Image 1: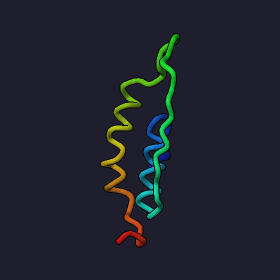
Image 2: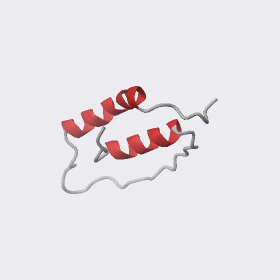
Image 3: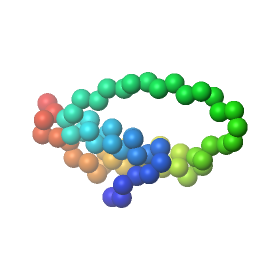
Image 4: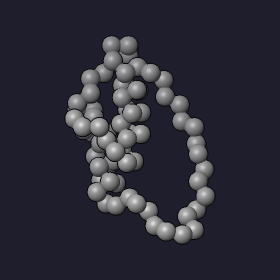
Length: 67
């Protein structure tokens, strides 16, 4: 499996850490609304992120540390 890019990268890293038995904590970040320009995300990047977790569940084994 290749390493993810874009918005899928933090999803994959979080999944792998949690699956590896590490504790994951969310720290919210507030972003100001965009005033100019447009997003770089396209449908392909969003689709990749949505399909990533089911794909990882099939490919990444659970840690032996989990009960």
